[in-house]
Structures are given as structure tokens and as C-alpha cells.
Length: 122
Image (cartoon, rainbow, N blue to C red; front, side, top):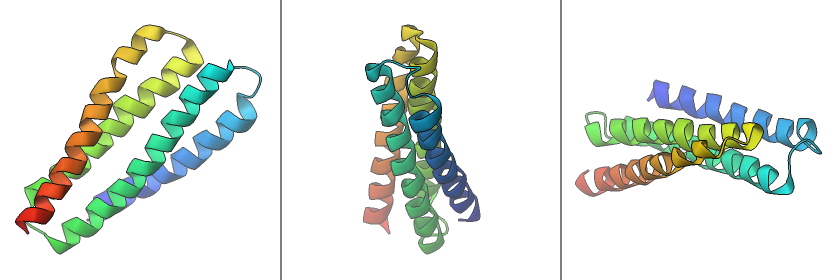
């Protein structure tokens, strides 16, 4: 539980910091479309930071659930792949990075599905 709480807090902090950086440090430096991409990365990082907190509380409830553990791992992988690729894409303009993003989206889906499955089984 402690690890997912820590990961949620770190990612929540980073989402706020990166959102502020995007709004103030990147304003005028990126196209409107790339700013939208940056903001999408921030939004999904924050949503899944909250998901990591939910996972932490579920891990406390169902201490022996490997499903909950894997739910948290998949959410973290999703943050790295989805948000990370969008941050890199928006600042570099390297469009091939967009091919990584769907793998992060699938990781997010898997994380939520595993958390739901854990709720059904417990």
C-alpha cells in the first residue's frame, strides 16, 4: 500500500508541476495543437495518480491480491508510456513517439480492469 501511495503522490506532484510548466514555461513556444497534447498528458497523469491512490487503498483492503498489485503496476506503466510519450512528442515534434502512446492507453485500461476484477473477487 505504501508504495502505491508514494507513487500516487509523486505523480500527482509531477502532474501539477508539469501542468504549471506547460502553462507558463511553454506558452508561446508550442503550437496550440502541441499545447493540447501536453495538457492531455497532464490530465491523464493526474487521473491515474488518483488511480494509484485508489489502488493503494484497495491493496490495504485486500492485502493478498495480486490483481491489485498488477493494477497499480499497469497504471504506473500507463503514466510512463502514455503521458511520457505525449510530453516528449509535444516538445520534440517527433511524431513517431505517438506510436508509443496507445501502449500506455492499453496499460491504463488493463489497470482499471484488474482493479475491477479484484473488487469482484474480493
